Amino acid sequence: MPPRQYLLLTLSDHRSATLELDRNGGAPGTYTRFLNIDGRWAVHGSQHAPLLVWDPAYADLANAAAARATAARQRPVVVLSRGDSGWEEGREIQVFIEAFESALLGHTAHSAAKARRLRTEADKLEAFSLIVRQASAAMDHEPFASVRLAAGKALLAKFGGGSITSAFAWLAGKAGSAALASVLSGEVELAGPLSTKEVADAVALAREADRLQGAQGS
Image (cartoon, rainbow, N blue to C red):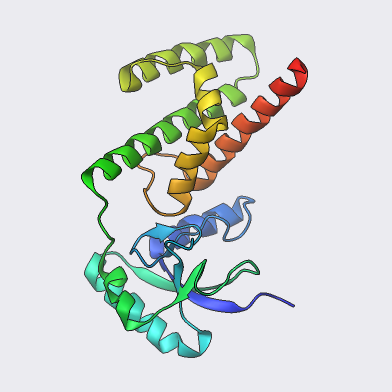
């Protein structure tokens, strides 16, 4: 039996990026971000911040909510239909009620300390992902040496030091997993050129490299 369908809200530019991903061979809808009860755009919901949903029978209410969100955020918000067999109401998703109206208007602010921590982790996640992608694409010695030199300079300027090895290790470890989880849950948004899928793929590359290295050393 196919999963039950719900209506969710997403930014129009998020939808466009997802359609572009689909055309280029990505899994349809895998990294689409939807509005959660904290007013943030998340790939998936959690018990702390489930995604807001409407029953398809109430499409008029979902469209009206999208219009209010569009007006408040000054960015086009649209309605999409999605279903997932793993969704459970009250956990991954939450049916919209009046109490969640504020989520349409904007996001719940983090404390200054938490916002700084999340921003730093997201910046590292993206910078390290970029290096891992470049290193993985450099098949020959000379291109790899160029990437290694450029990576060292970039990491020194931005974070005070680092290398390709440390970038792989960070992404493959707990810190990388936590940073990616924060992005997927909508706690923080990426600020650079990489898409969510590209970052997630880089983390997967780093984990696979770590696994292979461990297997060779055993």
